Amino acid sequence: MTMHYDIDITRKNRILLEGFLDRFTLEQLNKVPTGFKNNIIWNIAHCIVTQQLLVYKLSGLESVLSDEMISLYRKGTKTEHYVSQAEVDEIRNLLYTPINQTEEDYNKGVFKDFKGYTVSTGSILTNVDEALAFNNFHEGIHYGYILALIKAL
Image 1 (cartoon, rainbow, N blue to C red):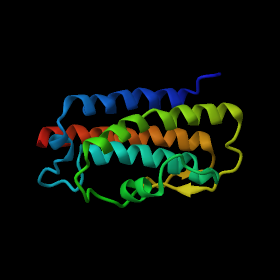
Image 2 (tube, one colour):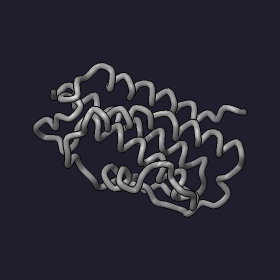
Image 3 (tube, rainbow, N blue to C red):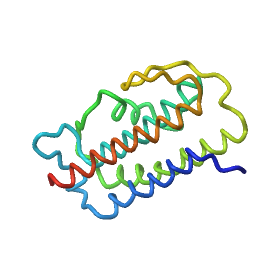
Image 4 (cartoon, rainbow, N blue to C red):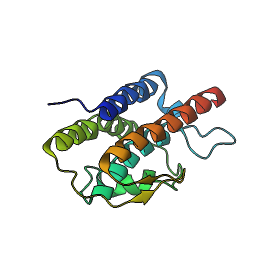
C-alpha cells in the first residue's frame, strides 16, 4: 500500500486533534467561550465530517458517517448540544477509521468521479487529490480555532 502525502498529513493532524481530547475535560471540550459560536469538540467533529463530504460525497460515494453526525457538524452548523463522554469516545474513534478507509479506497482507485465544488476561499475542487489537499488547509484552520478556544477557556 502506498502512502498518499495528503492523507499522511491528515493523519498527523488527527493525532494533534486527539491530543486535545486527552488534555481537556468533558466540560472544557463542551465550553463555548464568549465571542465564539462553537467549542473544541464541535471543531474536531466538524473536521471529521468535512473530510467525508469533500472526499466521498463529492466523489458520489457514501460516507462512513451517520446522517445524524453529518447534520450536526457540517458547514453552517454550530454547537447545539452538550456532547456526552460516549459521543467524545465515538468522535475519537472516527479521527482515524475514515482516514484509513480513505487511504485504502484511494489505493483501490475507487475515486473515479468528482463533482466540482467551489470552496469558501473561491478555489474550485475538480478531483479527489485537490479535495485531499484542501481538506488539510481546512483542518489547519480549525486547529487554529481550537488554539484560540483554549486561550479563551
